[in-house]
Image (cartoon, rainbow, N blue to C red; front, side, top):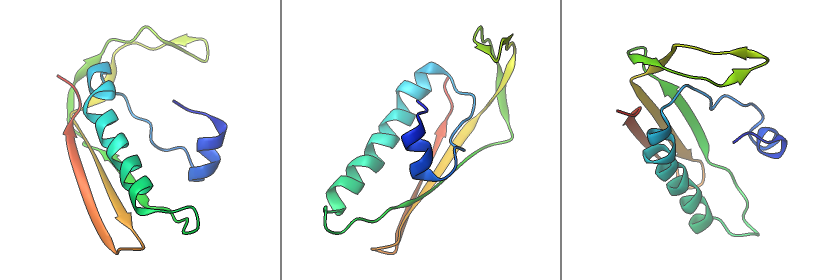
Length: 106
């Protein structure tokens, strides 16, 4: 979820895309926890450093996501949901990278 501290920590807030709740609370959440655990295990308090993350979506769609949430007073309906979501992580200390591609729900 968005908050000002996280937004300032990442400089920009781009990690936003339509997703299904099963995906957001399942595979995507597991991936986020894996990144957080990696950073905790490889960084000490005296050796603070960041990892670089890039996130993107496919241009294919799995259909529309029925949404009843209000955004700025407007109810959003029939939002296209990307079929795949990918992310890549680079560690500037170890000079290693990894990536993930996940099916967005269904």
